[in-house]
Amino acid sequence: MALLELERISAQYPGASTPVLADINLSLGPRQLLVALGPSGSGKTSLLNLIAGFVAPSGGRISLDGVPVKGPGAERGVVFQDDALLPWQNVLGNVAFGLELAGVPRAQREAKAREMLALVDLEGFAERRIWQLSGGQKQRVGLARALAADPRVLLMDEPFGALDAFTREQMQELLLQVWQRTAKPVFLITHDIEEAVFLASELVLLAPNPGRVVERLQLDFGQRYAAGESARAIKSDPRFIETREHVLARVFSQRQSLQERA
Amino acid sequence: MSSLDLPVNGKHDSHTRPAEKTRRPLSTRWISTLTLASLLLVWWLVTAAGWIEPLFLPSPGDILARAWTLLTQGYMDASLWQHLGASLGRIGLALVAATLTAIPVGIAIGYNRVARGILDPLIEFYRPIPPLAYLPLIVIWCGIGELSKVLLIYLAIFAPIAIATATGVRTVDPTKLRAAQSLGASKAQLIRHVILPSALPDILTGIRIGLGVGWSTLVAAELIAATSGLGFMVQSAAQFLVTDVVVLGILLIALIAFALEMSLRALQRKLVPWHGQSH
Image 1: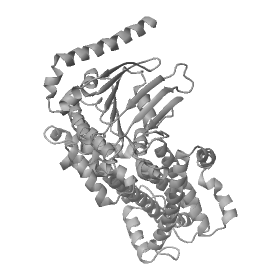
Image 2: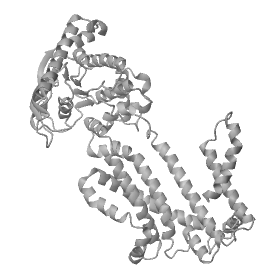
Image 3: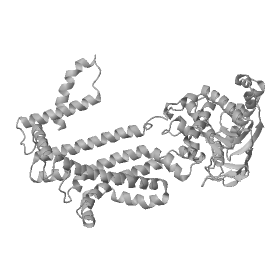
């Protein structure tokens, strides 16, 4: 199965004095949902861009199943913060886009796209235009599009950041169901602490200046939801609250030490 | 013209104002129609009353009568249809050639640093020159045949389309490009599936502007030893002081430009329905 490895990754923007990311080691294996949590400026998005291959690291090695990552590719699917859907295609065309690029015949790719739309609960929306969808629906199409190309890992860049609180919770639950059903390793970045604790099978906490990992937690709330427990029961579990408060305290202590330094 | 037009509109407003409280206000389309109608009325009034010599401004009726003779008998050995066809043929040929060449050039400028370095200064250098200024050079190089006329219009249309395409290509949403790349798109696929459709609204705007410029270059192009065409018709009529043909020619040129603009707008709405939608 897929194994994504980051060894001693660092990244630096040309002309900047401090690196954006320094000495990051991560590995993402099968059935894992790795969440990177951090305040803005901690290099979360840079980290995702490195893995996706949009940006090259200034040091270190990224490999997927032992093959070094060089530039973007279909084996690493990306879901973006604001939908990056193509308005000149309808929903079905967007979901089938990756397969179209790969040269899959029309009937075959549309069947696959419909299957993916069903997976994200959007069966009746195949013929809709993109601008007729709500924010949550667009993110589902984005997720279906990334999954239709059958990537080996799924990268998600604050996918629910622009959604309202209610839709966000629905989407988190949908993601856990999809993750459970497709068994794809997922790398997700967020600045929402509750979201991170709820979704993650492994949570890495990033601190800024330079971006680095300050804590790693193994969690099982996502697995419990996927196993059938209700989201409300999990989120009111004392252990969940305790973990959330712990992470919150870590984030705040970083911020304070940052202010003291400044 | 507009100062003559104002009192007419003012009078009209004072008529409708009492009723406005109960009825819907005039739509913009109606205001435009009324403006045109009052202009026509003023034109008819000043000519019918004999305040202006027909040599300077013929009456609308004279123009219509002249249009009929031009349609049936023609002017300068060619019917009105032949003049029209000659002009539309020239601009059509120039437009097709310009679209086929300017869009790839625009994509190259917007997408490739080296192509931008080579082509951008060339286009920016010749674009502001009035076509009449380089017309003599074109005649020296290409003679007085049909080629020179089409080439002049082509050059006028080329620059706006190339510049608009390059702008469209440069302003493609980088997230859409990254999304396509992470779905495995090659460079050619990026251009075909993301860059070209993204830039299409800008390209169509460029064609609209280019057609406008090209149409106004028509008269200049038909200065070159032409024997037919709307521009030729207006010029030769002016030399013989046949004012009604001059006015008719000008009106026809305006009408066709208007029709071209409207059909391109309709095409834009049909081809890029997402343009202007919040998405």
